[in-house]
Length: 126
Image (tube, rainbow, N blue to C red; front, side, top):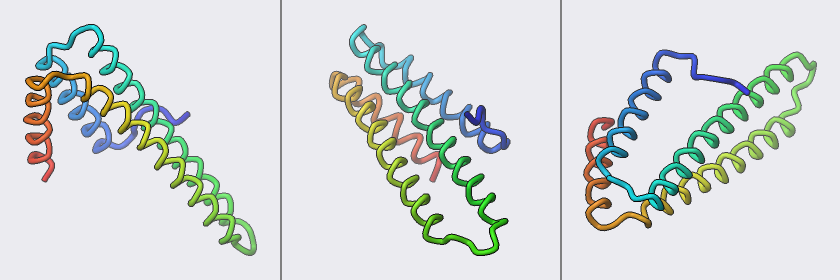
């Protein structure tokens, strides 16, 4: 497993994201059932993000080791890249499903709060 992000940009992004999630969590006033969905989505997101990071490092290392071969096996490299993309897509879908399950458990007032914060976050990143 790869561990924590190493670049200052990655660390800053992770801290900013965590701060935004903490703020949103505090504003939503979740009941016990909603909290379970929140925790499930958060856990799924973090685990899948780490799995993608690990897979990207693994393929990077695999490609690096292939550089020493006299003839590059581009077919193998392509197949490995395609496999990683398919896995990433599945992980993204799992994460999306977990967050949608959480969203669907919210009442209308909570959804409005969540939408406002999401729009604010999108404007900040634009």
